[in-house]
Each structure stands twice: as C-alpha cells, then as structure tokens.
Image (cartoon, rainbow, N blue to C red; front, side, top):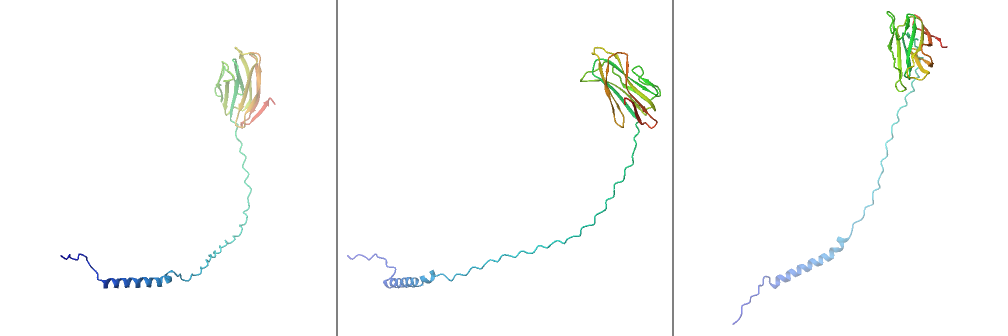
Length: 214
C-alpha cells in the first residue's frame, strides 16, 4: 500500500528562485555603494576668533583746587577768677595717741573743746581721741564755707601719748579750690605743747596768701 506524502511545501521552487535572485541583487548593490558611504566630505577651515576690543575708560574731569579758607585765631578766653570760699583742714596720724588740732581764726580758736563758734562759718566735722594705725590712720577735720577774712593758724597738740611710742608723727593738708597745701610731717614729743605748722590769710575776695612756713 502506498504511503501518503506528509511534506509541507509552502513555497514552490520558482518562488525560492525569485527570492534568491532579489537577495543577490541587494548584496551586489550594497557592495558597489559601500565606498561612497565611507568617503568623508571636505573639511572646513577653522574660523579665527576675534578678541573684543575694550572700550576706553572715560577720564574724570579735574576739579579746580578750592581756595584755602583763612584760619582765624581762636578768641582769647576771658580769665575767670574762682573765689577761694571753701577751706578744709585735715590732720592724720597712725599711732595710738590722742592728738588735737587747733585752728586759730578771726572768729576765735577752734579745738576739741570748742568745735563750733556761734555765728562763725567754721566747725570741726571729725574729732578722733583714740588714735589710729598704719592701715587705718586717725583723722581730724575742720572746714569753713565762706571763711571770715583775716589770719588763720593751724596748730597740733599732743593731748595724751597713750600706748604710743614718742615721738608721734603727724601729717596734714589744707584743701581749697586753687589747689591743696601739703604740710610737712611734724614730730610731737611732749604733751600739752602746741606746735603751729601753717599760717595764712584770707581777704574779702577769698584770696589765699600763705604767711608761714615760707
């Protein structure tokens, strides 16, 4: 018994010949045109770069120099005279002794027994009777506002030596608007004996004149 032919023939031999011929023609044309695709065109010459020319900077106009202004001398200040109308006398020492300050004025004598005088401008504002130390000196202060014109004298008196070793060294100063007067240190060696250290005068315009020491 004869078997059936099971082969599937989609294309006939004539169709295969047609496809093969077309493929061969395509390959042939590609080989002919290939050198033209690889060939490069002519290169363009580079264009030179031009640097920009800087713009000129405008020059500032020269201004004329102003004429110098004449300088006038400053006015001479009027001399002002300050009245010496405040006196402050201080006495200080650094030993355990009782030292008194006496201030002789045209109104009378001020002391520890007479700290003020009725109607007079002066007065004792501080009186020390126990003495002092080097860390905390003792002070006695007398002051007068608008002092009475006349002659003044400052004296020291060692009232009691206490436990202090003699001599007792005392210093002092007179403060006033025209400047202080620093008194030299004084050695007190004997009780009950006054030692006057400064003498001066005050006139009606409160001008200070030192009489002694010179």
